[in-house]
Image (tube, rainbow, N blue to C red; front, side, top):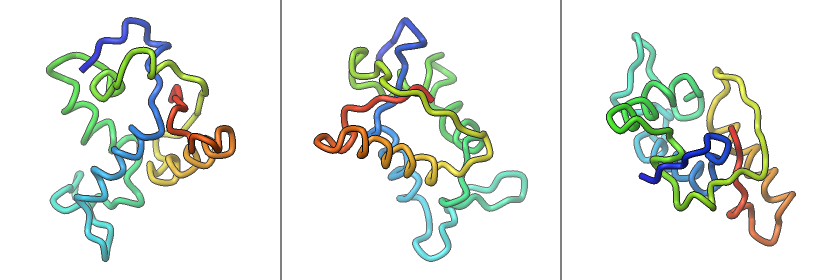
Length: 123
């Protein structure tokens, strides 16, 4: 974990978003997309419908609660690399996979030579 003193410098990189999706994909059924063992109030969570509410409840809070940090601080490469270049808005009910696909497309269009690897987003 790296402390990033200024909240406005806590952007997340495309690669870090991809790692989050990979984490979910490894826990899901390749046939149904069900996240195995992840049930929320009787609702079976699925990879393609896993949204920002679910991310906060199932990933961010458990990961950051004890150390009192942001998700970006928990996965940061360095303070400098996390400084955002772009801002992206989202709806809490928006599926994460679709949102990240949009971010990846934006990064590719804006920085095709780097495939967005060095792009950081304030989300």
